[in-house]
Image (cartoon, rainbow, N blue to C red; front, side, top):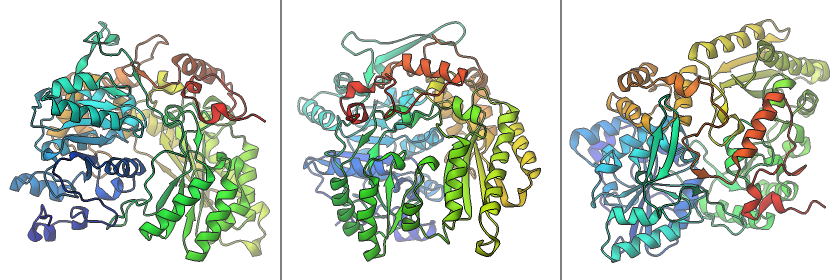
Length: 621
């Protein structure tokens, strides 16, 4: 019998107690004796974390081992966090309801830089020293994974190690090493030294950065001769045979994505120059359609979910999409299950498919042109023309849709005021198209075009890693240009405009391309009340500015400074398979406004062919 970590009295005091009680459908409970225990943390609230596919995959994979028990932990909401501190209750895992500190490993998936303060919250509430250097043999090995580990340096001092790449390939070897060394009576320092020799494992304490007088990196090297100078990204070469959860955990609460998620492919052929995922998940690898049919049937049967979503960076590019959808439509129609098909490209828009999988009267269509002008779309290598966009919108209107959401970015490299004004002008063209092509008697009210702009943040391992950012005021100035020009459009009553917070963008930019000197800033923010910074209700820009001042760190050094083509970046020790030469070639092509064809049209020699699978080896005939 598992004893709950929280009393009924506490559960009645807090918001949404179901976040903390565990015992959900398909969760895994094991006898703990003799098990390697892995506490897997998504450093955000339960509803967000339960929507994350990566944890579901690794949770299933780890628990298939008889000698491993993987449990889950999420950031407690501030109401419970305060009670845990006040009553000296350690943070606990959901499955066993036992303290996180009892685990052998505490693993974090790092999806978003603004969650870094939550990592410190979880460590403190778990009674684990925040600094890796202060941990003892009684503390878990703290390991990080996920997209943010492609520049782990801002938080490197808080982690014992990082897993770089896709988790399906190397964890078994890491667990076997841990068990072997523990049986030999070896300690954490010896384990970490040996772990650093495994492909894909980065141990920050075994590397040292040196700096030039101007603050740029002079060198980044291992401190021991038997530690590799580069850490190689791990990649699943055969996605069809890779482990995948057919019995995913079903949350008690409505999660952000409360549905079955079917991953149809990994990677992307498109090569958008701002997109980190499109670079770090290369090469594009598809899962066989017959395997997908099996997995869809199994997951729907084991969860009771009423919706299934196809997961992909660009669903339209999946070669067997038609066959898969025909199968799903037949199965889901009989069982009254909805199908969600995100990540469609407007140039590959299929009206017949969308009519079948969406309720025309209720749903809106979402497309991401990213830039308003053709010149800037060429700079970012989006591969969309205005004819593609208007053609897709026209098909949608003819099919009965009257709501379209358009996503753009402001602050892209080489952006001018003409490019900014082109955003509402494009929205106006789309609205005009609706009124020109749909007869009055067939209109379902006025069309609604919603423009949303985020502010561009350069990410590591993209061609735009050399790009500069703007200050907060400049981002807001650009948003005002778009907003003012929108009001001047003929169809402005049919257009709405939303924009992202500029201050969050500034901090995200620093953390995305920062180095180890930022760890003191993150700690200062946390010690002064910073947590849940990914939530606008909790984010405090002034607190971050105070932390930079207190630590003597200049934001402009990381954001607005020009970077030379030969500068050493904090993440250059990672080999992601996409060469620096390719990224630099793409950066120069962007500045020239040249377009690079997608991977199926022509190989651009990015380097990902070394992984031996996926689109790089498709038969061109």
